[in-house]
Image (cartoon, rainbow, N blue to C red):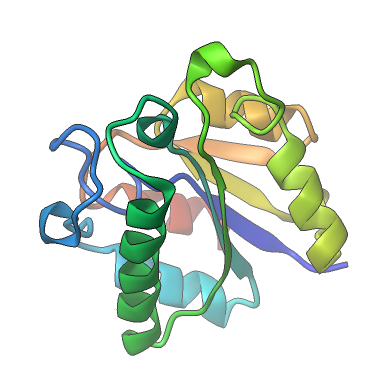
Length: 161
């Protein structure tokens, strides 16, 4: 079993002040995200992104648009020596009642099975209560960060290390 850091995307990895983001030109990384994720990685944590993307289900952008943006995001992480093991996403709107939308834990359980994650050694970092509730449902520790705030990941890192 391995340890992991699970991160919400919008508001934790990137600024979430543009509404439904599907264009990489509007995707802006939070200032300290590369440094902090590299530190987590150096401590032996696998890194995962778990994100609700209701903009797909609501028709604001396509799943293909999301995947293109996702590929560019992963490329930026790679160029900064950061390996995101996998991005898990829910493409549904809240009204769809799916099992993969946080705070439900289907995506975490899929990750645990695929990567042999030990939730007791892992953490979820999010900017909404649904992120914390998702982590709680599998007895994982979690941190709530202030949306779009540089320095928040540094604070969390200091608490985890």
